[in-house]
Structure formats: C-alpha cells, structure tokens
Length: 278
Image 1: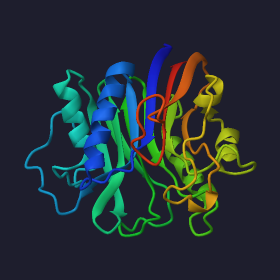
Image 2: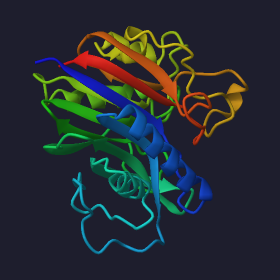
Image 3: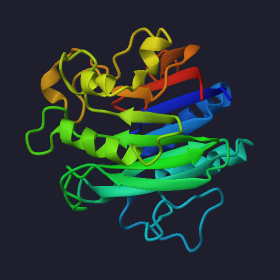
Image 4: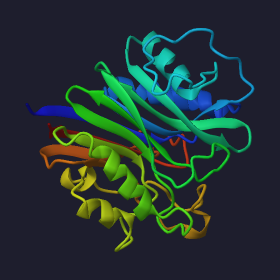
C-alpha cells in the first residue's frame, strides 16, 4: 500500500546550556504545527552530562538501547513536551553516540506521529569509542511498515573513517530488512555537488534522493563557516538529504528553517519533503 510521508530532517546543533536551544524548540514547534511532519530526524541532539537524571521513562519515549541515560535538558525531550502542550503527540527515540565538546552527550533522534513498533541501532564507524568525535551510529525505527533512520555520517573524504566504509556497514545493516522500504534522513556529510563522492555512492547503491525527485530548489543546507566545513568559505553545499530505497512519484520538497521558511536555528538548514511511497 502506498503512503504519503511528510518527512523532516535537521542537524539541530543543540547546546542545552545556551538560550538558543529554547528558541530552536519554539521554532520547531511552529514548524511542526504548520507542516505536521509524520517522521522527523534530528542530529547533534544533546544533553548536558551534568544535568539532572530523569527518574522515570518519559511519555512517548521508545528506548533504542535500555542503558541509554536521559537527562532533563535533553533537546528532544524538551521538544516532545512542548509539542504535547500544543496538542501534537509524537513518539520518539534517542541514541547518544559520543561526547560533544567535552560536556554534552551528543546523538541522534527520531520522532513519529505514528506508533514506533521497533527500534534498532547500527554502528557504522571503525571506532565505537564514546570519547571519539569520529564515532558514528545510526538510529532506526520501524513505523507503519517501513524503516526510518536518523543518520549522521562522517566527512566523505576522511582518511581515518572513510565514508565508503561507513556506507558499506550501513548497507549490511539495512540488509536485515530486504522486503520493506527504507528511508534515510540526516546529515550525510557528503555534498551533492562533489562528483564521485559519497552522494554518488549512495545513489549508485539504489537510494533515491527525495529532493531531486520532488523538484526541490535552493538546495544548499550549509553555507560555509559551520562546524567541520570552515574551509569551504561562502560556497553553499547540500549535505543534508532524505533518501528512499524505492522510487516514488509526486510530492514536493523545500528547505526549512533557512530564514525564509522559518528562522535559522542551527548551522544547518532543514529539509522537508512530502512523498508518495511504500
């Protein structure tokens, strides 16, 4: 059965001890209310390592790992509670991946307006050391007969953690679900503009770019001087993508939280797509 998905991804670059995090929550609440996304993937989702621990599992939370620690200033927790206050109910999951800036638990998250029936995690980097900033893991959720992943891969030209190896490990993980559609949402750290790079590798592996198929324009999601891309100057790059393992027809895509479709709240712009898929 074909379903219409409203998909959103954003590298939110959260900093729980900064006022900008509260502003980001408010901006996302407005965007959720306007677009009503069905599945949302967030990257660089942080909590302060010194913040108070939660004493019980929050409403709507679906644990990806039973040992994951949740703290009161976790960005996705604050977002889910703010959405609930507006009458927007989302189930959500969070995977802490690595130590960020020496003081944050940094990870990825998924939110869904439909029930999450199952979750899984995939380690795609060579290292799984929590204190290594190059550790990369993916968070997956089974929702309505399809698998959705929040992804944050390493830099596509990193000689120590090659994107090609990370992608190969991801593909082996996705191979557990050969009969179901797979959607990848997130920061691929691979510019669509770089010929022969990670973007082309993902395409050749049979994953379709929702942005291209839905006719998106003004696609750059980073504009140069952001974390990890300082040498890029002012040139914009499209490194945040929504990918589908199956082709689709119809739909549309746009940038969000880019100063035009909502305020800029991160060093990345968001990507939103409505597509008809399995």
